Length: 195
Image (cartoon, rainbow, N blue to C red; front, top):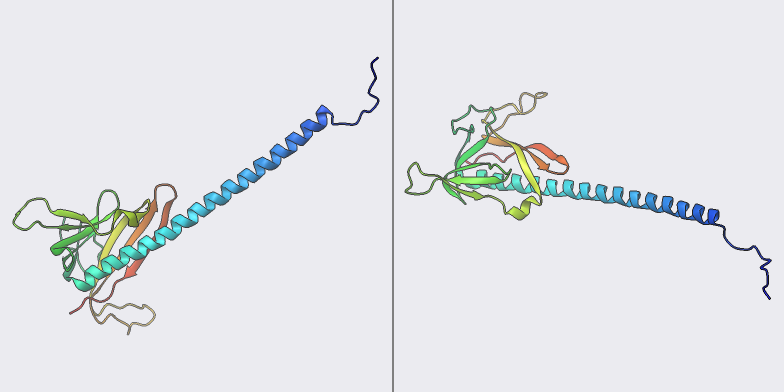
């Protein structure tokens, strides 16, 4: 003999579907929030790396100017520029890379030192990266410009009596990311040129 089940306790298919749909909505919201937080954190890490790279590049160029001699600003074609006019290259007798060194950006956005090879008149120069590849951490440099600031230049429009005592340089550049675009841009005054 069969017994009939009198109890109707349990979950209907409609109730089960509603529970699954609510769980899916909550899960999707959690995944979206986590993805947004991760993207934000990656961007903050890139900005931090860009600031570190900017500081490192500035310090490397400042050391070349401080320790080298005969620094002058050049156009991309190697011709000189007038004081106060930005140029794309800085030529100097480098304490690290040797005489006739030119600091510039290569095609990949890396700061390089281009130095004539001794004895190779008119031959291609030796090109070496100023910073290791690891220093760039997926970033690159753009819009590098050097400007010579002659001694006696007015440095404060509000107070014309303030002027530079010695010649110095400013360097400006942008730190870029292929994923996020521009992360840092600025102009930095380098220490006065010795002499």
